Length: 255
Ligand code: ADP
Ligand code: MG
Image (cartoon, rainbow, N blue to C red; front, side, top):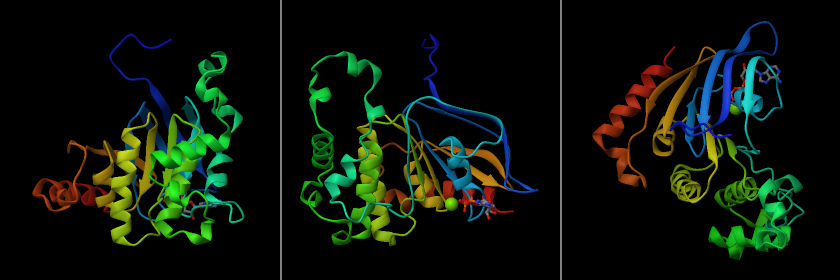
């Protein structure tokens, strides 16, 4: 099944994809390949079509052209979308759906993970994330950053192959946003999911991504591979090579 070549398998493949709500296309002739475990960031200003693109990958919208996705997809939004009447642990547990069991795992009768209840899976993940003390709280008892961490835990608990993130830190203050970026990278590196993260924040894109693309006038353009080693410390934001990369992306965003 796997390609014997050295290329990691693709989990998302868009080919010549065009999408319109009305007359004018929002997305034009878009091609994008995301490979396993990759962290791809797409930058565009408000209204450029970022959410639309994620909804196409998620299968909620269909355009002209091809969109192929391999594996389970989960989405994280700017607003947390937690159930206010559930505690954190239940909010995470309800996201462990039946389709979350990988085909191979079901066959291993009595394997440890197969025996875990959804709540136990949720608790394990919350513990791994250092959020055990939040498990019994309700969403209204959490800060904005904590709520987004729960939303992210909820996306990852089903062990998806692809996590789509739609400006998940957009509503947070700058300091919290920077902490969340570091937290997300640390968590992502211990996981196996590819991430497609959209943002209007160029600095966020450079801190997070392996690769940055921009959407301008409905077209998706690759801009750069981000070669800064991980983990990426906060001081990287002030390094000359970081500022130079930031300017390069900014230039691509200008109309
Ligand atoms: P972004 O997420 O980059 O801010 P969107 O993908 O939400 O941009 O929107 C792209 C364009 O499509 C915008 O011009 C927006 O007004 C339009 N649009 C988004 N959703 C709809 C919809 N359901 N019906 C009609 N137009 C829409
Ligand atoms: Mg959007």
